Length: 498
Image (cartoon, rainbow, N blue to C red; front, top):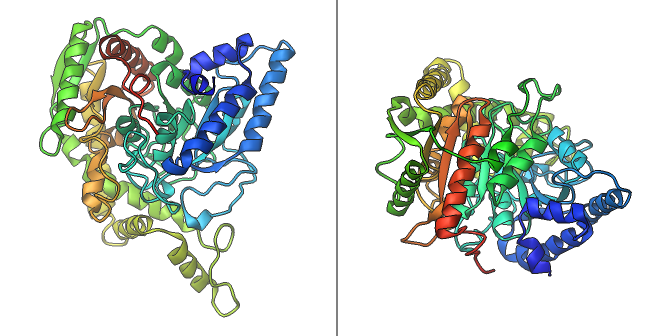
């Protein structure tokens, strides 16, 4: 029975809880048992809140017994990336510098999950401060990909994607600064969505790069992602970058997926050297499938996309340098050297030396240099100009098409440790995802089969204009249904054994 419960979709789980066929406590206990059974091998979670999750589940069951109407995800368990503050539960951001920190408040996203009666199982592993593409930069050790535990589950949100792929949770939350929702989804055979920048509140989300960071839903199906998207999105007066517009009808789009008559763009810059043959093969099959479903395929040329990676690795480290200046060892988190023999400046230096990992230090130094006097215009200023060109290329493209599709990542999951000593090779994992973050528009990754050479998942990326997030779900649901009918779901029917 427990194995059956953990393999239900979130939508199915919520329906069975609402009907009384299952209780929220039964569902939560099944997932907690799964975590206990497999997470020692996977290492998806940094903290499991067993007592809190069961208390939330009991509250849902009591509501149902009283005859109260339950929301569309009431009682459904969720894995929360450890970058969102959670009152009374540790938030480490994958870093030693915040080890043991217990936030005194909930992030807006956390509050919305609780208000919707979603059961938060715990906090998931991640690259430190969301800086990475593999979850190997976590101060608490890497997470394994459930398809092959010797390979990475993507990053920075590898803990969330691995929790989904190993059936430890039917829903998860990630954040996407340069692809950290979509890239993990691609390499684990799950669904991940980066909403339009500003569509989901960043209040209470520990900042890495403020103009790029965006929280979003992760799930095993397009409909489940849409249901979660609807819960977490919406204007928040506590976030100055929050968009004050209605949430697009994402659930309706997911329930009525179709590409008939839509114009789908294929960007020539999203292929070439460095792309794995099996990834390109599955992408080309996806494009052919879209055409068979009634879409018109349009070739696009977006020359500035070739500069996106370089621009990103100036803008993101610059903003990281500014944001992480607050971690000084004096107000909260780790404090090293405070023995009366060091000045405040020395305590700050010793704390940062002990608390930050190599990748975080690398990006802080890059960003500080790019923002320094005499170099600002040459580096950060020039990168912002490239960002404008990328946005213009997207605007021009969306005059011709309704959505754009591409591979999500150039390769399938690589081996843990394979790129650890080669930052440039690691950065290339986000080649296809970064332009969307720089422009601020919406994107999704969903499974499009397995690469023939290694039998690992491949992701299809769908990109939509700003605040047209519903198009992602409309196209994604159509593609997902066609794939399931033709080949079966690569995760739900060919799930890896742990």
